[in-house]
Image 1 (cartoon, rainbow, N blue to C red):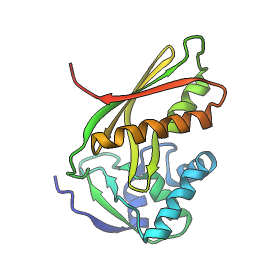
Image 2 (image 1 turned 90 degrees about the vertical axis):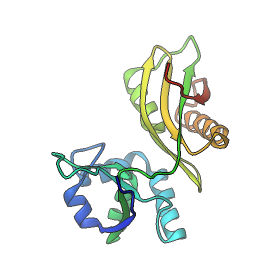
Image 3 (image 1 turned 60 degrees about the vertical axis):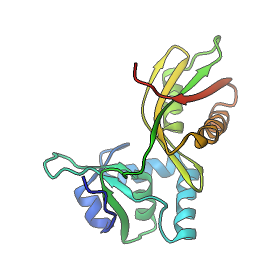
Length: 192
């Protein structure tokens, strides 16, 4: 699969590709993200203004045969540009060929605590996609929850980024759940 980067008019992208989440269309998604993740959206706009583009292109589902092609990675970035009426965005079909390693991040709530269903949703939303620093943005591929434990599966460019991501996850959890106690551990994901 080609991972060539190209510019695409934003109106063409939003006509051909659906957001992967949340909402059924770009207007709903834009409203949701600005209402629920305003700081993240501000950070992304700041990156765009500073650099004249985003660090990474958005990733589009590659198949012409798909019933509803989606933006695989980059929904937040598309919405930032929609809000600021920017006319085009940098994109690629599929993902980069840059080598990545798979990791799991285990988030454990102290034994005596549990989260209700709304808090569980909030937890996943808060860590689903997050900025670590100017060089690293993490998107969670999948997750599972059991009692007071969550395991997130993510890809990182190298082992050196592990502690940065661990610390950033702790910061996010402390901000969103100040009354809770979590531990976070990231390790290389090995298929058994």
